[in-house]
Amino acid sequence: MKSITKIVITGGPCGGKSTAMTWIESHLSRRGYKVLFIPETASELILGGVAPWTVSTNYDFQKALVSLQIQKELVFEMAARNMADEKIVIVVDRGILDNKAYMTDEEFDSLCRELGGSEVSFRDNYDAVFHLVTAAQGAAKYYTLSNNQARTETPEQAIEMDQKLISCWTGHPYLRIIDNSTDFSVKMKRLVNEITQFLGEPEPYELDSKFLIEMPDLERLEQLPNCKKVEIIQTYLLSRDEDVELRVRQRGQDGSYIYIKTTKTTVANGKRIETEERITQDEYLDLLMEADTSLRQIRKNRYCLTENNQYFEIDVYPFWKRQALVEVQLPESAPQAQFPPYLHVIREVTDDDAYKNYRLARTIPPEEA
Image 1: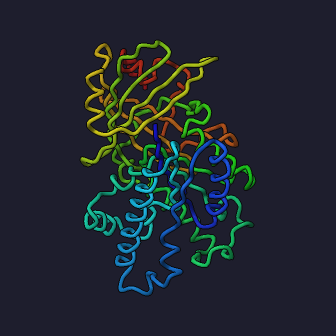
Image 2: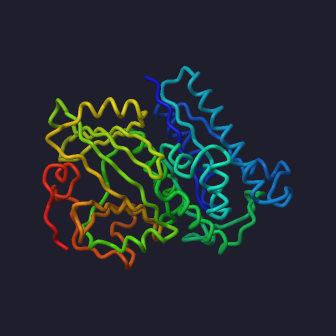
Image 3: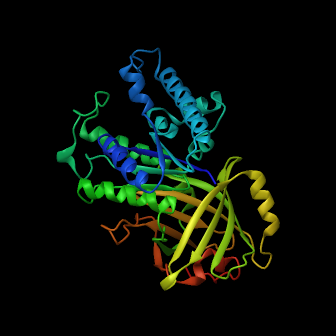
């Protein structure tokens, strides 16, 4: 059965995107994938003479850029569907949301409407996003302008732009941030490892750490530029295998939603393999007919927060008033999470089954904050 996956490689200036493309091609090809690359549209336009300083306004430039990017992605997706290969990965060198970093929120919202979409629909049109942190942050001696004629940022500007880009993508269902805590070759290996885990090659073990926290100030979170709120409805399905957990999820905001089917399989030593599949709204509605009615439907608001190159997912449930849960992806080089001062940890619950969503669908633990 043909599988087409579209991922974004983004990051601050001099983050390693060009080298990353070579690594991705080499490693995924060996695993049987056909890899297609969509070049960075901004660099194509600027080097071709179309730039913010050659057109009337920056808005006009961004409109031209996003319009061209939309068409390029449609062409690559059409071509992928007509290829004989069964496993295809489309790698996008910067996605549409990257352009938001160069506009005001109002301008970007206007642009999205003008082009027939929304921030959420454009963001969640990609299956996964991988951000390479600029060398200016953590590897300053390797920061250079010499390998990209369209790059003009100073190290300070590069760091600022890096943070803006992370903020733009915050809220995506699958965002991973690859920092400079290791040397460059290991950074590339970490990127490839994150991508292969996402693709399920060979076994994407869950590596998230989960913590019980005091209920945060939600108004403050919603005002942070590096935090995005999404609505989630999660429904568990009947499974014929006790080692397999099935669920479907509606995820999005402001009337724009994506639908995901997740399969979790328990293997040796209690580890779990998780695979996710993007499905249509009609497929989602059909699968709801297979809901496990012995389990309640989980509804929650998720606050996706990026801080110190870490990605926090704060889940706020309607049945708790004083506490919430937060998951954080920890790189191998930094086994301890660095929580921002406005998140107050009660205790780690990574291995506590009582705080897994499946258990919450059956029995709600009492308030403990």
